Every structure is written in C-alpha cells, then in structure tokens.
Length: 356
Image 1 (cartoon, rainbow, N blue to C red):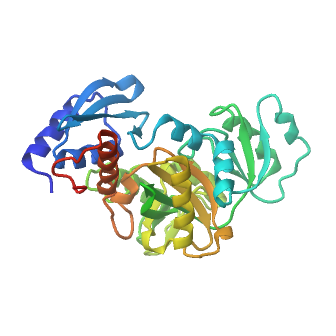
Image 2 (spheres, rainbow, N blue to C red):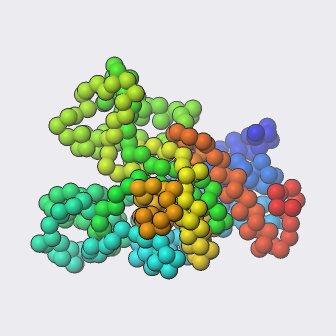
Image 3 (cartoon, rainbow, N blue to C red):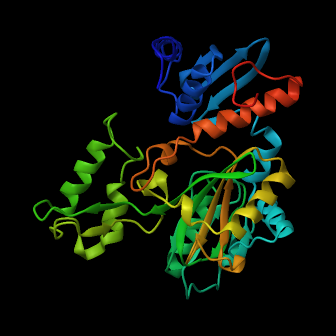
C-alpha cells in the first residue's frame, strides 16, 4: 500500500510531467518511491512524449526515461533495444539458443518489391516491418491482391519489410525480468461478450467507453471499429449476440489493437522458460517481452513454440491489470532487478532493500 508521503511525492512528480505518462513508468516510479527512492523530473517534452527522470537513494543515482510510451532503464540499454528492434538480428539470436520463428518468404525494400510479382498467396502470410514494435505495420494477408499494399504499408515503418508464413496457435507474451519469468498472458483478439440485448456495435462502444475509466480492470487500447467492420464482413455489427457469447472482432491478437490479456503465468512450459532465460543471459537483456505463438504453451516440445517478436521495452500494465485471471504486480520484480543492478554497479548494499 502506498504511504501518504509516497502518494504526495507521486502527485508532485506527475505535476511536473507535461503529458500523461505510460502506465509502465508510473508503476515503476511508485514502487521505487515505496522503497525510499527519490524521483526527480529533469525534462518533459509533450510534443515528443519524452520525460527524463533521475532516481536517487543513499548517494546512488540512475536515469529512467520514457520516449513515445517506451520505458528505458538500466535494464534495457541501447544495444539490447537494437537487438530486439531488428528482426534479422532477433532471428540470428533465436537460432543460437535453439528457439524457432516463423519461416521468412521474402525480405524486400522499395527497390526490390518487384520480387512479389508472380507470387500467389495460397495460405495466410504475415507482413511486418523489419524494425518495429507494438504490432505497427503488421498485417495478415489471405489474398494475393492485398500482398503488395500490405508490404508498402509495412515499408512506411521500416526500410525493409518481411513476408512470413502464418503460424497457427494462440499468441502469448512472456515477461522476463533478470532472466526469470515474471508473468505471462495469452492475448485474445479484440472481442466483446453478448448480453442478449445490445448489438455488437453497442457492445464495442460500451467496452471502449469503459476503457477510459481509471477503474477499468484491463488494457486501455480501444477496439478499432474499422477493423471490426472489415473482419465481420457481410455479417456486420448490427446483430445481437446471445448472453455471454464471445464475439471475436479482429485477426490480430495484439493489445495495441484492443486485444484482451488472459493470465497464463502458471501454464508456460518450464523447458520454454529455460530456453528464453538462456536468451536473456546471452544478450544481457535485463527485461524483455517475448511473443510466442503456440498451440499449447505448456508443451515441452520446443519446436511447437514459434517466437514472433522480442520486445526490449515491454509494457507492464497488461500483467498488473489483467483482463482475466491472476493479476501480478510485475513492478516489484522489475525494481528488484533495478536495485540488484545498482548494487552491483556501486558494489554496495542499499539500505532498506530486499537485497540485504
């Protein structure tokens, strides 16, 4: 529980920031303040969505910053972010530790996009930018005529675009902190549950409105009605689902597209955790979000788990405010890891921490 002093300090901190900070930074600041760390704002630039803070205690000091809703701390330096943002580098590292990823069909840029001519989409393919995060520029293609426009769109986010085979299974996010699994969730595509009275459109509007409330237990990204219209096709959004009927509204299972986070922490295969832990150790990734597509996340058959992305600046909120299942305050192990890092860097014990 936050003390009155911590709440006052947090309110003062927020008053110095010229834009609403991302939830990940807020949770980490809160946990640091509870442990006696002083957080001070050095710069805040609303037009760039940038805030720079110093964190200090007993003479030890480090930097936490947020840029475009990405949280940067000593746990995710520029090298680790570069590794995770570049798909080719990510795939090389995955191969080194024995993890699989969806097969690449093409890698093109604006000058080689002509390679797509003559290729027929017979099965689903995924188009994604070569360097991006958060599902930006990603599309699932089922028709040949949609392939080139999707690649051109992906190229607006990155110099290169990748066309991959579509991997079947459920999408999961594993949050690794200090080489250990802190939490995991299964991502369900944007969806609503029927009440027997409201149309699908009305249910979407109600859910999107609820997401604006500070009391909402779940992710904040709204369901994109235009995507729901496209997904539902001729069926449309003006029909009434049965009570408790789950209506899926998108092809992409991504929190940023209004998807729901379902806790899966206790279901993840221990062998998969070991492999991902080795990945973290080899790359010095202090914190990382690993996206996995798998028909069964509990299976010890590593070949069935395909890694689709490694995120060096993973969001914390979906694990803390989980849609369904057990909520895990991952800010606690996050700050544990930060304090461990500072302890090693300064070669001293910090008064009042769990590391004494």
